[in-house]
Amino acid sequence: MKISYITEPQDRNACLAMLCASVFGREAGLDPLVEFAGASRLLEQESARIVALLDDNQRLCSVALLTLEVEGRGVALRLLGTPEKKRGRGYGRRLVTRLGESTAMRTSTADPRLEAFFTTFGFERWYRHGDSDLRTGFNALSSVDALEQAPEVVTFQSDAVLRAFKRDPALFERYKTRFGEGLAHFDTLT
Image 1 (spheres, rainbow, N blue to C red):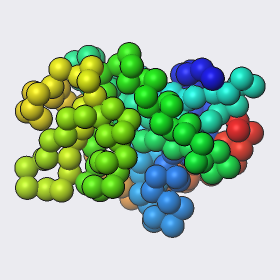
Image 2: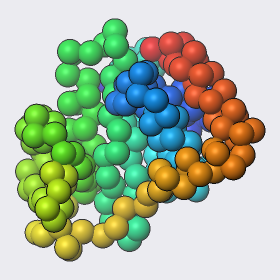
Image 3: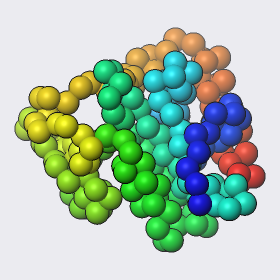
Image 4: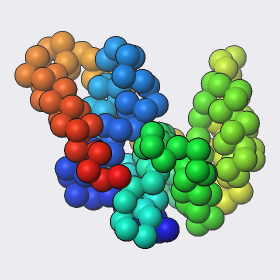
């Protein structure tokens, strides 16, 4: 098994579409499409990366979307997904654990079960965001000892993506088509 960046545009779209559909669900309204559009822009700006765990036959076993910290010292695990037919075999854990061995990483969640899950991946220090339920965990390679010390992560505003979709129906249709084509292409990668 090896870790590889997915850089070919069609494969990258396919991986991102799978991640958005897996994390948000296919019945989540516009959320998966908004995430797909916003993350696509981050990828185009080279502020994010799609990283995959590949088997010996170069087939995808698990995929992650990493976004860069503004200062470039670490990454945030934004999305993680394993193809449905390969779930339950520890591929996601293997991908994140191997990435965390050489990279300062963080992840955020408001779900206590996901926090416990990610703690087993090496995200050992968790900090609450003010009065909200959102918490961010950092791995051992991160030098952050308090949330206030953490550099900003490059991101996008979901509401800005929604406004762009409303102003430009053709833009909405282009991303919707790319998303659907990406999901269809993803099966060829696994």
